[in-house]
Every structure is written in structure tokens, then in C-alpha cells.
Length: 346
Ligand code: KG4
Ligand code: ZN
Image (cartoon, rainbow, N blue to C red):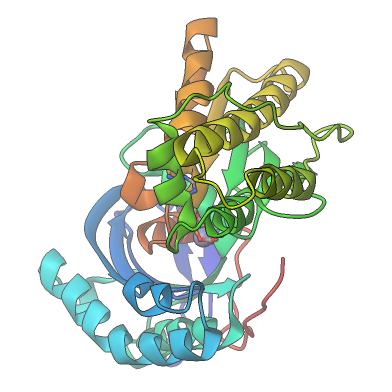
């Protein structure tokens, strides 16, 4: 449980969390990259409303997210998504227990829009404000609609991060491995671009991979110590493979499938190692790349070995605000100061 004492007018501290003894309705805002999102979540697990305005169409024409354009689009969308979240929930601000917002990591100009909106809502309605780390929030996507409780091993795979985390309790998380170069999502997006697929490359590459032969090309699996990863060598290997076709038609589906096989088996092996060494019987996946069909399939195969496996529903894998609200509820390691500043890197 945590006591938050940052309301502007009433000096009273407010109890938040599973042991608070009453129903908590947390409204959260997420704007760290190219999704403007707002959600209301009851007691960290039950989504009352969930609104996401995606900018993918805008950025697709540039082949990637342009930070200044993203920030401007957040400004245009923010009030609309907040209104819609209240409307879908059929709730008024006085019924909200606390307002939460993503503090970082992310694009600074983008984060500022959502975070300031969350702080303003808290101040105007005299409710507590809770600042949340985006990566912790991704893990909490796993609490939505489940009864999952720590401890467990988490594989966090997104556009910016690739981590294996030992989640000892709701608030105690130890990163035991991470990428030493590209993140998995980044590798997907770069390889997709290399073979001429549209942005965002990850989901498209995943779809084509399902039509190809995963063993058509043997791609190198980086040998990195412990639980760490490296994907830049693999990206170069795909580049070399593409060049070897010398302008002839590429076997796109087979290249996608072989790349996906290499990435997913690397991730699987390290997760398995972490489970064996920790002795935990539960594993979760999180982050945008957790939507990937082959990664899900391999990790879920651990169920056959007696492990409990969880992955958020697709809409709670990619950026959303419900996971931020859940994190504000469960995790006591939050930024509960209305003066907290946004940050770009973890
Ligand atoms: O977590 P997220 O929405 O944003 C970040 O915080 O990074 O993750 C976005 C990343 C992008 O790189 C996107 O290409 C990737 O997730 N992604 C996928 C799939 N769906 C989204 N990568 C592989 N397969 C997918 N099905
Ligand atoms: Zn994310």
C-alpha cells in the first residue's frame, strides 16, 4: 500500500493499492511515443474504459516516428481521448481515486503532453497524482483481467527495450538481462525496412513470416553472456542475405520466417534459462513485440512443461493507458511528486 500526499487543496494523504481497503478507480494517460491513450481501471485489473488514438498513419509516410509531429498530434488528441474515456466509463472526475501519467522513458515532447494533462487533472480535481515508468507499466499489462501475482520472470520486448526481468514483488523488479545493441522491435523494424516492408515493420514481418519456411536460411544467433542479447549482427546478416540476391526477386516470406525463427528461439532459450535458475514457475511477456505470433507460441509452449504463462491481450501489449493505471495501483515504486520531470531514457 502507498500513502500519497500530493493533492493541492486537501492535505489528507490518500491510500492507494491492493491493501487500501476500498475500490480504486485510476485514470491514466500514456503519450510516450505515437499513441495518445487514456484509460480508467478499477483495482488494477478491471478495465472500465480504454481509449487509444494511434498516429501510425501519420508516421507511416515518413517510415518512422517524427518526434515533433508526434508531440503536436498528442496535443490535438489529448482532450478528445480524456473526454472519451470518461464517456465510455460513464464516470465523472469526482469518482476517480487518482490520476496517473507516464513519466518516461519516451520522447520528451510527447511525454510532456500526457504527463501535464494527468498532473492538471489531479490538481483541478484535488486528487492524488501518480507518475509511472513506461517499462514497469508494460509488465502490468499482465495484471489486466488476470489474477497473476509475483514472483515471475518477465520478457519485456518493445521498440526500445529487450529485457529479462526478475519480478520479485509488485514493486521489486531486477533487470537480469538486456540487449547490448538493438532492441527486438527495432531489429524487426529495421529488417522490415531493408526488405521493403511498410512501417511499422514488426506486425507486417510477423504476418509474412507465417507464410514462409523458418528454416530456409540459417541466420546467426549471437552468443552473448548470461541473459543479455545482441541483434545487430543478425540485422547485418539479413542485409548480406538480401544483397546476395543481387536485385533478383527476394523470397520475402522465407527471409521473414528465418529471421523470426532466429529471434524467437534466442529469446526462448534465455527465458528458459532464467526460469530454471530462478526456480519460478511463472513467466509473462510484455511490450509491443509480445504481440508477435511466434514469440508467443514459443513462450506459451512452456505450459507443456508445467509453467504458468501469461501475455496481455494484444491491445494491452502495444502502448496503452490501462497498463499505466494498473502500474499506478500495484507498484509502490512510482513518482508521486507533482514536480516530477519527464525523462527520455531508462
Ligand atoms: O511497446 P511498443 O508499442 O512501443 C514501444 O514502447 O516501443 O512497441 C512497438 C514495437 C515496434 O517496434 C513494432 O514493430 C513492434 O513493437 N511490434 C511487433 C509486432 N507488433 C508490434 N514486432 C513483431 N511482431 C509483431 N506482431
Ligand atoms: Zn511501449
